[in-house]
Length: 563
Image (cartoon, rainbow, N blue to C red; front, side, top):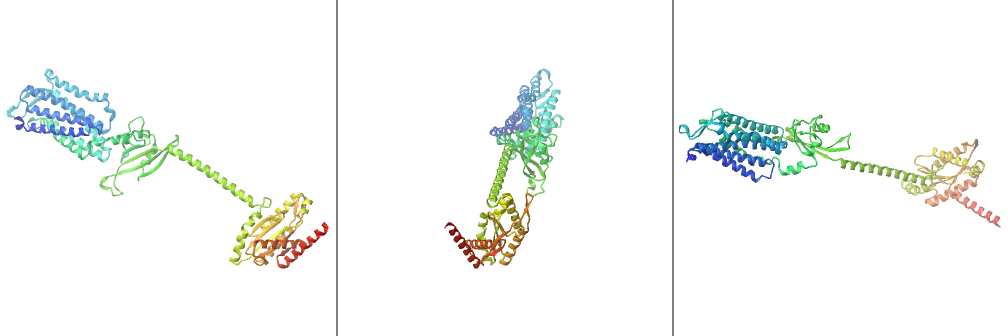
């Protein structure tokens, strides 16, 4: 009957029901986060506190009122301890959630409960109780000095917990901040109600503190669904972020560390907790990270190297911007996420591969160099430095093909040093080699870049002069002949001179095929030798006939000698 007449009891019953529903909802998610179980105990303590307060208002005897009031104090002292433990889990102060430190948190509430249960002997908590004085629907309790001590403890626990939440919210993500605000908002009604009741400003001196938890229950019930209150540190985050080999740091816009995983301590402060500290060069094990963190734009990837130890870290920085200006490049930066990945093994492997590639490239360069040297040696005459006969026979067909297409002449001179054997016999083979080198130098001084000069064999040299008519070629060959004739060759303090005989032809005037052309020029050289040497003979039909006659005379002479 009293529940129907007493509005306070109805409110308290509603508070107990709502708090129980919140606890039941959280129980469904009990495995989601470490902070869920302290939160469930907190809401159950609130439900018990509200139910005990309702029982106190419905009590009609002093004994029943004393029993329910004692239960109120047990529940109220328990909920402040559960609230502080929940906040420690929420804000990440896991070092304070160890069994020994939780026992320290429970010392004051347990001592207060002991005082309440022993009040009949000392009377410090309440001095007297009135059942519905002046026809009021409320029971009135006259508190003693011990009550104010319990009230002080209540405020110390609640205010300390709220301060920890606000401190965490100042250096956290936007979602974390909203969750923190809702937690603090849920603690505000009990603090206001307790203050009014303690100062005697509550209506009809009613204890409105347990009634205020109705608003707390509603706030937390909304937070569970709208702000994902118990999703702050989900299992996915524990298994992914906490066990991630990559270091992850979250800093706010002032570069204060608001969160980091265990792997990040290697690069920050291995010996202490860096949460809440500023990223500067004095506190970081890696001051290079602080410099990269100052970047104004997102840093996709950069390699941070420690010169003192063989360690390489790949670092990326992502800016977190305010959600209300997501599309604007000038939106306010609210924080940064730093991801550090140890790439020492990868980098060292890349360095080994790079060194192997460099070595292979060096070896390839050496092979190409040796190949070019071998090729050069295969087409160069080692004594004179001119190309050899093998090289001459490669470009000659191309020149013979190009000349008629371009309607240009191609002149060829075959040269043979006169009496080189006599030089070898008189002055030695080294002197003969010197004569050959001297002649090669004279040829080189009188030709163009487009001309092809080769040592054709022995003391014979051949010179191909593209785009040079017969008259000009004859003049050029004569200049070479005269230059050699005028050259004094000194060897071993002895001087001598040599001359050269030449056969000259011009394509296509004196021939159209390579074989026929070389044969004609060789015949011209033979005629030059037969006519006294030190001269130039041009390949013509007359020269060819003379060459044939010379060959015939030589054959007849040989036959007579054999006979």
